[in-house]
Amino acid sequence: MTIVWIIAAILLLASAVITMIRVLVGPNTLDRLVALDTVVALAMCSLAGWAAYSLDSTVVPAIVALSLLSFVGSVAIARFRVRDDVVRVHPVTGEPSAGPEVRR
Image 1: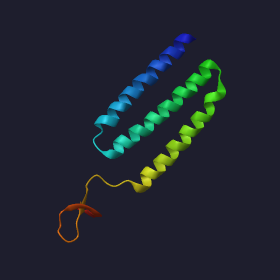
Image 2 (image 1 turned 90 degrees about the vertical axis):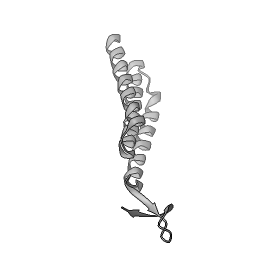
Image 3 (image 1 turned 180 degrees about the vertical axis):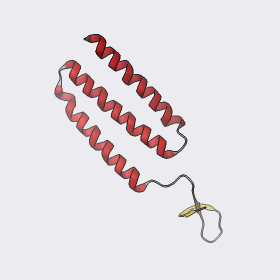
């Protein structure tokens, strides 16, 4: 049975490495944010696997906290994300600035 836990840990680690590559190389911010959400899900799966392997339920509150944090983060991303193709332009000079958003 220990072989199953070792294989599960290796697969979770490989998934985390692939997802971190997506976080670093993602073509746009939405891909990076989805990958970061996946990293949190992998952390929750790892903690759940540890809880099942060690028969220790003290990590369950951490899993719940991570899931709530991930949910709130996903909702905030969906609400406040700015598109990648948006250019901020100064209304008077027409130069790029930190002012209101104007689409090209």
